[in-house]
Image 1 (cartoon, rainbow, N blue to C red):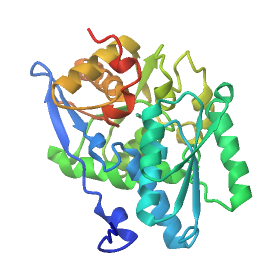
Image 2 (image 1 turned 90 degrees about the vertical axis):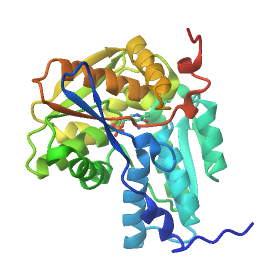
Image 3 (image 1 turned 180 degrees about the vertical axis):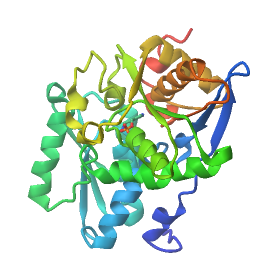
Length: 312
Ligand code: PMP
């Protein structure tokens, strides 16, 4: 089958539509507004950064037919980049630490991406170093999600604006998210602040999250001490004022993820993490407060992880 898309390479980049923002009210308390980011085309919020960064690079002539894009990620960003590159008709190499869930590898391959595994012991830092080496070797383009301000800008000029358009009254009181690169929390906070919204940034911090698949969103987890945190200059440089933190034990994040699934939201564990933290924040907020959070990705990339193991 030779499928030709209307609009050619630009088709993918133009076709993303706003993800729904839905309210969940807890016992007549404050409202939690959930941005259903798992409904993006590749299954996660990372479609936004893939689109934003690659579109800019394409327009600037930094990539084009024949280019190779290389990114370090333990999953979602690589999947999103693989799909974007497939749509653009260019080569993609995902560099990931050994031990990431096989589902992710299979999805990236299905999108035509190539996989390069780096030693588990070197963590995501080892993968980042390998991207630099590979890029030098094949003149590849590096999106550099951990350092590229356009990661946060994708949310600042994308998801933040969607939220403000979608939420009644065009304002929120708090934005709650776990942090991998920090792009989501930083960008949502900045975009809402740009619009004059006084919004409190709230970090959803996993405590003792233990499975490999979530390495990216567990920068603060004791099981991967500081590995990703030390890589992300986006979050550090943003130095968010009045940053608050809600700690969420892993079993609560998992239980909430399963609960969300059974309510019709087929999400991954960082959605449970975010939702629990948003609920905690909402419980201690004034009546009428609007708390915004995101459900970042879909469940199918966790089938062989603890999320689906030992179901009660
Ligand atoms: N959820 C999932 C599934 C992720 O993969 C990540 C990080 N890539 C996050 C949440 C955190 O997003 P961010 O990188 O924007 O901080």
